[in-house]
Image 1: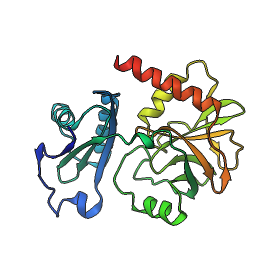
Image 2: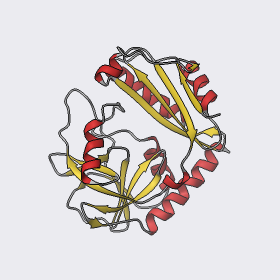
Image 3: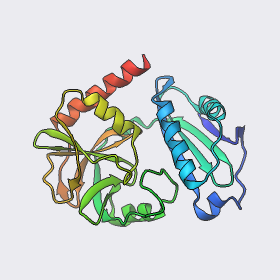
Length: 250
């Protein structure tokens, strides 16, 4: 069923003095079900555990989280698990917006300075700057560019490009989120040409995609006003990803 639980209870609330509310000390993770079953649940909870440990946020037991997730899940649902520094947990589940899966998005690049204190691998809730950037630039998502001119990720997704007919993805080296769906896409690629390396902001891209749990593989239709879009390699990869999901979940 759809719904929201706070600390395992329907209709509960988070105190206003929770540091998560006051200072943005929140970590979260979003997973989804295909049919009735969650895809790569252990990977999502493992990433949540790492984010919580880095930020010093209490991590509930997996038994508690699994029970909450099961209570708010349904066929083809997304489930978001949020943990606050005050020790509160919020678990919400809703039906997937199927129109969002694979939908092209306009994007713009924005500069980012990596923090020595908050690794890019942490999925945290301090996102106001990113939200305002996307709003002011009138795009669906913003893509971060580091001081060396490398494309890292967007504010909601990992990146996957096609260059000279081969798949290229930025490295999973701590500068960006370690994407669960990204990992599944790379696994699904199989014998397709694949390279893990930095992508330059001025590089010629045949195809460019946002990769996430809720979008799967969504073409970037325009980047900084320059048309890009999807193509045959992405179409093949997306089909292979869906085959992987079916095999994984039976």
